[in-house]
Image 1: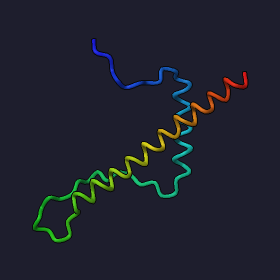
Image 2: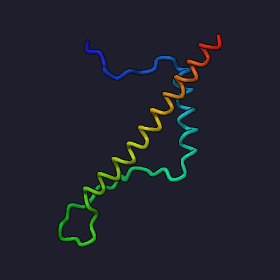
Image 3: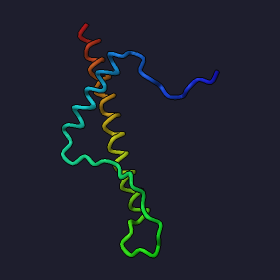
Image 4: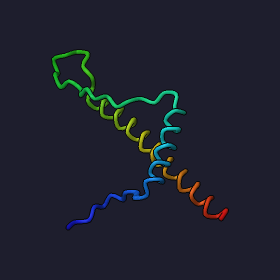
Length: 88
């Protein structure tokens, strides 16, 4: 059997806490965009078609924003966990 390289949090309480932190971070965002699921048209005869490079760049920026929020929620959870251990 091959082990997965993805580290999954096995503690359901911690996973739930990280999820709650992520939701709180998302709610704080004023202009959080969603990824554009409609791909660009590669019909070069259309004058006002979406530029594929701009479409990919925009979706990349949106994805990086979400990844940043997830990483922040994990970091904040770890800090909360660390504070709890220090106070014990």
